[in-house]
Image (cartoon, one colour):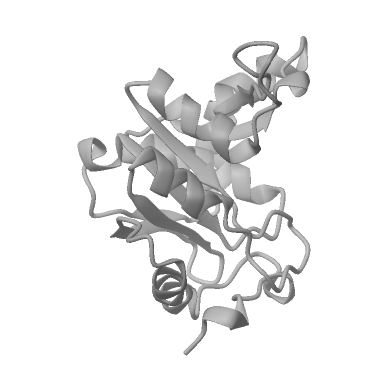
Length: 194
């Protein structure tokens, strides 16, 4: 029912999808979700992924996947992140390590990660999305929601080279001119702008 409502809102608001990649190319990937300025982003992202033929997945703390919230979060693509160690001698996993472990557990996993980490203005992007892709050896797909043009898309794929600064400069260049629902809450990370 939730997905039907999202589909209807996507259509009524006049949104379109722009993705040149095949489902197979996106089968295992980290999908950057930017700009992330509104709770509405999940509505348009869920429907955009459906139209791409890719099951959207996004990380949420395992503790939030309880009844009845799991009935809404699960169908939208939420996947509980289990940071517990494999055995009692090990320490708790980092979020990056827990997400990398997911890529070993699933045959198909397109994990959406907002690098800003918040809907509020963030002048520095978090690097977790990059580290997950690098360690899981999967591509980074640059996804966007451009509210100005009512377009959800993902038109660039980067295989992380290990040269974080170089790759981040390429990512920042890609997001220039893309406008979130609340443009004042979106900023590129100036450390990586040429």
